Length: 540
Image (cartoon, rainbow, N blue to C red; front, side):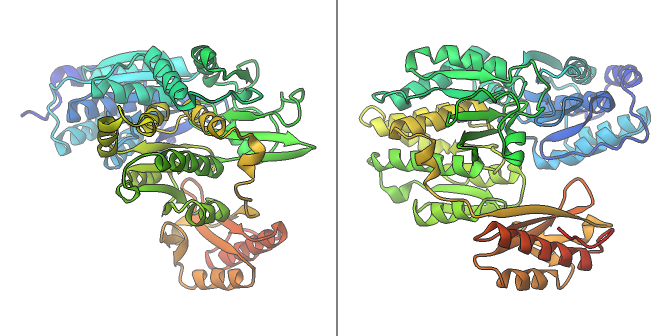
């Protein structure tokens, strides 16, 4: 089997490189799911990602995917997310290939790096390749999508332009395509709407509709299409921030979760309204409301607990031994301690802790029959094992609970976090219990917390263990953190190096906000002292 790039491929690579050169000073670095930067810097990066995903398609003999988006970033940014045939994020062993390709400075080094990918992965240079491409609604996206297509075509692959999609829609379509199932965009809407109707059959609609902040992003268009498919169910959504304003500007899930205030255009929304917010590419979801000038946030932790409650309710009616179905919630150390305690103590569901990053949560969640994961920022999903679904299909004729669980697996995106499907899951869970946000919020009360950061000369001096909950180096820092925590009732603290900048991130919890703030300051000062902090000692 020949692994050397063909003369035709080399010729196309040389021509394309002149069209998408990289600035020597630009050193893109792979993040959680791909690359992000100012849009004008990215043509070379996105072109090379097109090359990579064509090579990945050749390597595995299946269709891969690529989405041009910068998610919750400001409008002037853009990025690219890379998708496996399974619909999951790019296999981690290929992230190094992505970094090396993106950072090559000239044509010769790019060809050599690409050849190394073909050789090391034993890829037949003449193998077929197909890549599904999509983009969000940013003005810079169409040109970057063309760069991705050029990369795919330079290796002789077929670039399939799926148009303007949310990131989760491309993941969903790719997974279905490779499973041999109907994968058109219309199938996405009909599958999820039908599953929602199954889950709420025999229940009454909630008293008020849902008002959705669409972040002025791509989610607005598709949420309104989903709304049309739900007309018979009695569930009505009103879309706001649909594109007239700035993408992610004073709106969107990231803004709501961090700033804890209403979107800028919600001044006329009645007090106590049930509201939800998507981010720019609709892969994050949070709920919120404002009552008597008090803002109430229902973040990813709260959504995960509600999902677990829905699963438990259905399982209680399923005539299978409870011990034969392994259910778990996967969290990071950033999950509020109150949510962890409620899940373990009140729901009796196992909680697994992983390092920060959705790819780590996803990897752990697939180990359960039903694995639930949501980061606090609202990115997450509920995964069902193939073996459990096989068992459910065998008994669905005699069991409504089995049919409901199958419907839940169809409603919630099995590839990646999806705000549109997440809305349907939350709404189904609330409607089945006839709950509003007040009852949901009463499940548990978040412990007060504080997040801060300390500027350091080199974030590499900090290393962590035990899913980032403890410091391994520098020596002595963990003991100082433990000492600070010991003086705070129900205190908790951890630090971790940033993945993108020379700062150390600090997280603390306590029974009061004052105590959490004091603990955060104490820990930040110890980090500054021991980990070569830059500038003056933290004072607030």
